[in-house]
Length: 126
Ligand SMILES: [Zn+2]
Image (cartoon, rainbow, N blue to C red; front, side, top):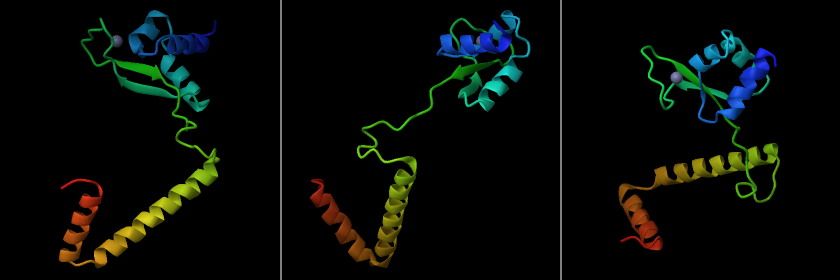
């Protein structure tokens, strides 16, 4: 196994993260460079302060955690839109929101109060 393969295996086998000291124990002093290379090949690796069980460090040590990127599931995307279509939907939503805000600004204070009351009544809140 090459060193980068070792780094990959350690990340994959340790979902809670791999402490920098663990890489050193595996004789991979240049682990930082390998992590950089993996990130450049679209690996998602988070860096955070080591809080692994049993790890008590005098100095601040980092751990590296591989994670799967969030993907849009079918429930989030019931109409199976591709990314471009999803972005268009989002833009439309944002534009509608903006229009609503503009409309809202035109109301007087009293109108706003009345509108809020009406909305609360519709939502079943007194
Ligand atoms: Zn540690």
